[in-house]
Image (cartoon, rainbow, N blue to C red; front, top):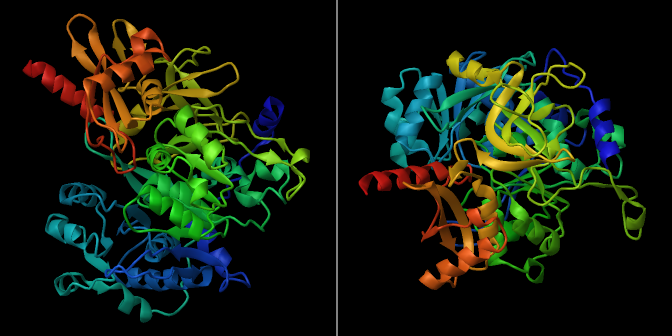
Length: 595
């Protein structure tokens, strides 16, 4: 195992052409194939219409994707959009969202995804700061965008998709369907440099306003090794050689993969870890515009024969509690699953193995340097019935709860405040070097924060780019997540990482989810406090508090059990599914001041 991993790392080299465009490799090249009209790109899952009646899913081919993208590029050119201009895409998972990304990027413009969960204030800040010239909206986002339009002087045009409200239609400048229908001709794509900006994604920091991370076209190349490894070769295992597997850009065709993730395509996880890499390999991705539920997840994956997925730990916890034995109700065809955003923990890890038949590959990255660390539980050898005995693991099997190792091509380390690598077992900041082991520039790096050179420079210590996430490295090279730098705290002199305690709490049948934060204490500096969301059928009580404390005390160090437990209906979450411990931590600080 170790020999194979080291061989992959040592034998890997980046091949980044001078000119590269995400839209070219994700759409246009597949549209040029003879099977373009039959090759499915996007499947829109529609469970029911407004009246509750069942609706059949709708499939769109790569030929349709490129034709619509060409038409939209002509529309945007007619609206004055030029190379480098920012175009806001405020759309859910749907075919037109994929069209918008392809259209904007093949023009050499910059796609700026904005989440539907953003209220007017959040939208206004990002539209103003980016100086976006056009916004593409649908019925779910049009009202919020129109509400702030007057405060965004650079925003010249608003394009509306499927607007049925007469007032909304009156206040947008362009009707998507009409404009597309009038532009049925090919578009000559711009030949972009690999280093040109392709996507501008705003990240929410723990302090200060959001920062726009400018992602270049080459970043997709940097993403591919992590995507392929975390998705167990993405259905190419029967044909690919180990050498090809370590270089995702040269995998053969013939994959049977069907991808789905509830991750919003407006975020790095949904865009760079789901939509774009799936299209890069010419495979179908399922789009779902609606509220997540465990029933929806299982039903959708069964209906569309989903083989590969990315599910947040929060979603997996809900699925585990709702369907402890899903195989009795659902027939799945899963081949691989990636998870990220929070530590998976061995409770969820075990559930995926025993009940879903999948070893979940935990992954770690962030918008600025995405898909850099993770696991790969892939077996190698003949495929088909009766040959499993001839297969062997060629990845690096996931250790339950571990973040994994640096993916091929990425030089990852745990560093201290001075930028020195930490010894085994000593916590530090997860960081990525600008160069791989051969001295080649790593293409995954962002170009910098939009109009914020100070923050860009502050991200680096020499050639190391800091993530702000704490971890320890074990003797085998696996990283173990300790939490955000501002999530780790000291209680009675002990350093506390919340993830381990939260994972332990979730193993209790009464706990659906949990978050651990420090509660200020005059004597100890801080106490360990847990906020707990109960699983259905359980009620809060003093007896349950004592039971949960005993549960943790018996499994972890004595100083780690929560001295106080507070039951709440839901945890504060980011729009990307991460627990906002900072919100709870500040709440405890305010309460302490009041006392």
